[in-house]
Image 1 (cartoon, rainbow, N blue to C red):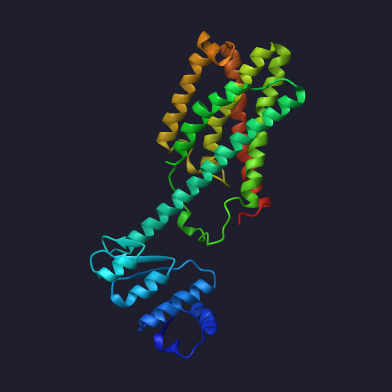
Image 2 (cartoon, rainbow, N blue to C red):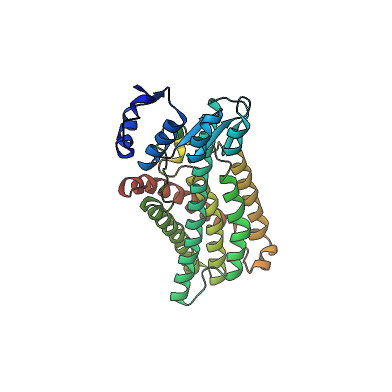
Length: 312
């Protein structure tokens, strides 16, 4: 529905807040009307973007959360007060920018989930090691994990493509928290799964072989587990299969490169520099199998967390 600006003149600011929600088009509005409309939407908690090209648009552009000026047809006054300038004067560019902004935001969430889950998993291993008075992973191993396993995959997540339904999602608003109940629950759940896998491998290896092999395989499980977990983070609430596991070429190359690095570290005397024992092919394959299995467990946990915990 549409309405002319003269209908606004007789309304108080409080009345205008509810009035603007009834209409999608405001015609024949003055600069004062534009300012009042922007303030009315802001008062109801909306994030307001304002576009314009003329001098009369400048007050509302400056007041809005995001002022968008026209680069070709816009006046100097409009360009000076605008937060963003459209160099092609095309409104479709705004849609593209919003879509890219949502991709970046979602990738930030993916990176936060990846890094915090992995770090909390390491903390769990350290705490359990303190309880049993035996190190499950050594301090040098933590440094190895941070340098080799954590950094590159988290960077690769930044190249993740946008979700198909990204533009159908509701705006986040001004007060949306990053650490929502859903996010906290997912971080804790995935960290416990990652830590549980490494603990299981450590205790089984310790009973079958020796302490050195056990710590070595525990480290291997952490490194490979974090590579696998990267693919879990492609989707925060749904199954990663639906998006396509191998659509991010940067992630695929990074994962393969880090995996190949592990071969000389765990199969040759080079690993002794990191206080590691040499492992057999069978041991290596066994750890791969367990970490891949953890991928499917985490995939099942994500939608459960999404149903049980609010993401706001």
